[in-house]
Image (cartoon, rainbow, N blue to C red; front, side):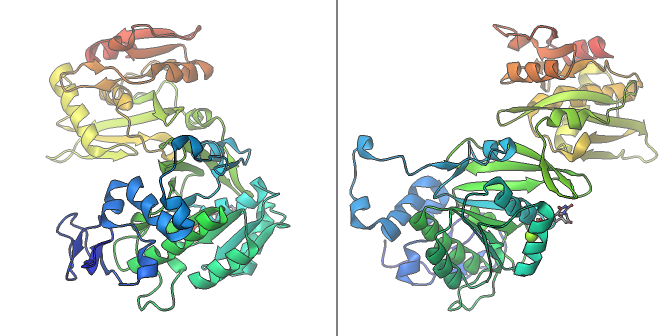
Length: 470
Ligand code: TYD
Ligand code: MG
C-alpha cells in the first residue's frame, strides 16, 4: 500500500482527496467524505479505493492480509484450493434459500436492508425457527433483549439455541462472538454499532464502515453466517447501507409497501449465487409466511370484465411472476395531463404512451393516466411493456382486454414487439395458473416449446396485439 495514503475518501464511490469536501466531485454524493485514519491494523481490513470500485478483487486481497496469514498469501494451484469450507445452511424455506443462492453460506457476510418497519427484525428472528439446531447469536442495538424475546415468543421461536445480546460496542460484540462461536450471527442493526476510540457517532459513515470491517473479519475467522441489518435512510448524517454494499458478500433488500401484506426479499448482489432472485413473504399476525405461489396471490383480486386490466409475466431472477397491471385513462381537466405510475417507471410509461399515440393513433394528450401494478410489486423488466401499453389502450377505448391472455413482450419506439429472454418459464407459469393464451413476440417463435393447453399468439406489432386482445 502506498505510504502517501490520502486522508479522505468518499464512502459512496471511493474517490480520494487530501481535504474534506462537502460534495464528491466524482459521484456527486453529499457529505460522503470521511477521514481515513492511518490505523494500519484497521486499514488492512478496509477495501482499498480500487477494491471498492472494482468489486471482488480488491476486497479479497484486503482480507487475505488480515486473517489468513502468510500461507494464504502465496498463490496456490486452483486444483489444491479446498471448497468444502463453503457449506450452506439450508433453512428448508424455499423463499429464503433461493434468495441466498441455495442456502445460507458459511463465512458469508450479508446485508439485509430495508425501510424501518418493513420486517427485517422479524425475518432475522424467524431464522431461529428455520434453523432450530444452529447456534445463533442475535446482537440487538435497537431493542432490549426482552423485546426480542417477546417477538420471538410471538413468532414461535423456542430459543433453545438462540443467544441474545444487547450491545452496541463492536469490540464487545466481536469478543462475545469469538467466545460463543455461533453458526449464525445477526447484528440488528449495523447503524447502532460503534468503535469507542472513534469520535464520530454511531451510524456515521466511518463508524458503520469500521464496524462492518470488524464483523467481516470475524465472519471469515469464525466461518459463521453473518447478517447485518441496515436501515435505508434519507441522506444525512446517518450512513445508508450503500457504504456497506461494497464490503459484504450478499446484499438483500427487503421491499414492499407497508400498507400491503406482501414483502419481497430480493438479492441485489450475491457472491455465492445468482443476483436478482426474489423470495415472497406475507406479513401476518404470527410473523412472515413464505408465499410459494406468488402469482396466484398477485392475481387474486383481479377485476374481470373491467377495462384497463392486463396480466404480464415478469421474470424475477429465475422466477416467473404473473402480475396484474391496471391503467385508468380519464379526461384531463388541466392543460398538462397527469401521469402517475405506481410500481412502474414513470418515464417508461411516458415512452409507451408516445408510442401508442404515434403508432396506434391513440392520443392521450387530453387524458390523465394512472398506472398501478397490483399487490405493491415494482416491475422494471422490459418484458412487461406490452402489458402496460395494452392496459393503457384498453382503458382509453374502454374495452376490457381478454382475461385469459398473458402479455409478454418489449415495445420498441417503432411500435414493434421485441423479443424477450426466457419465454418458456413464463409460458409454463401462465399455463399453470390456467391462462389459455399468451401473446409472444414473433421473434421468439423459433424453437419455442409452448406448453400444452396454452395457445401462443405471435405478434410483431403493438397494433396487432391491440386488435388481438381488445
Ligand atoms: P420489524 O421486523 O420490527 O421491522 P424492522 O426491523 O424492519 O424495522 O417489523 C415491523 C412490523 O411488522 C411492525 O409494524 C409489526 C409487524 N409485525 C407483524 O405484523 N407480525 C409479527 O408477527 C411481527 C413480529 C411484526
Ligand atoms: Mg428492527
